[in-house]
Image (cartoon, rainbow, N blue to C red; front, side):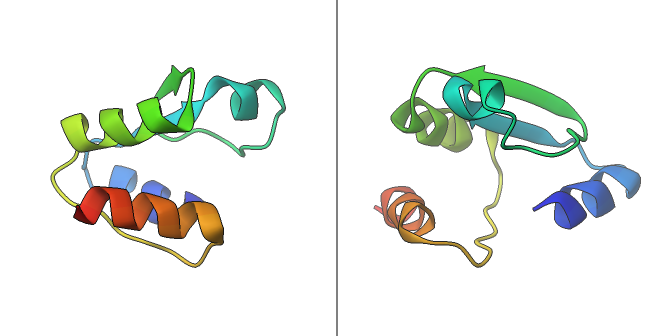
Length: 74
């Protein structure tokens, strides 16, 4: 995700990273590009993604990625 967000940001696009606070506090994320919004839960993350996005790109991931894809598609 870092490469995609960096390329979009360098191309002039607005980039908003939405992350649950627990992951941000655990230092599981890399360098933030653009704006970062921390939310309490994964469900809040998906809601904020739907509110603030024009499009979605799903990159290789695990069960959590599949959950997000299905919630966004429904």
